[in-house]
Length: 362
Image (cartoon, rainbow, N blue to C red; front, side, top):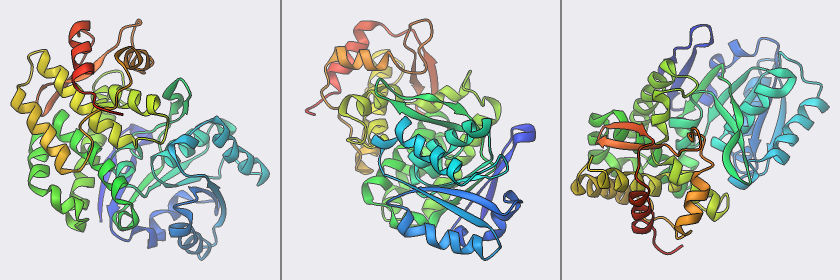
């Protein structure tokens, strides 16, 4: 097991990364002092891990309230969030009753938002079971739900007490979900960690084959990058915005296609190609750089062509992005491979060219 720390003064917390961590009650019990917790999961993850976790905690005298939600990005909304509140109120949960998020990014985001708002704040714990949630969404305290007009537009910054990333849970992950997580892993190399990107170019096939050592290294290196960024910019006023490489385009794809049609990581992959294309049109990176990025996503078996939504539809959806300031869109782009910047100085003509060039058939 490897343990990292997200340094946020009195709200600092540990990220434990290793195989078989779900069997280690000692990692959870210090955060369950009142011997009661609610575990929020979904219909896919519950049959795999809920009973084992509940049995483990009950063997140490912890009362477990299971809350099982429908699975899918299309359920990351206010109606589903209400189901969590319903269960917490029905079981008379108190401010000292932690919520445990057992699942992927949707479960983590919704559980965290429920924890931030129920009784004006209760503790919560992240147990991410997808690669994407282990390397990205479970760390940093971003919580929230989608709205029909925009992804993740309703939420709160609310940090967990601890994160348990059990690499063994990735063995039950569908192939497309594993690949979607790899998109976020590649992101860290592109924005701030060139040596890691080079490692990914050498080890992509090991990740796809679910090599335990390679996966643990990728999760650890990704979390190190995320923890460093969050430690200096918790609320995305500066450097943290760089973690959104590909997301402005990617969120537009997810929303435009209908939540759940494209996985988040698939949207990020195609969106990153669009960001690279725009960076090249600005003269910051070369055509060969763009092809290098494209080849890596292709090796990860991720989409590199965005769906056809129409330029105006893309512009409308991207205008709802959280990075918009004063009505002006801002983009995370690459000044070079391994170094990203946030800019609002993008000529409209170049943006149109990218949108037209990077979209294939839906």
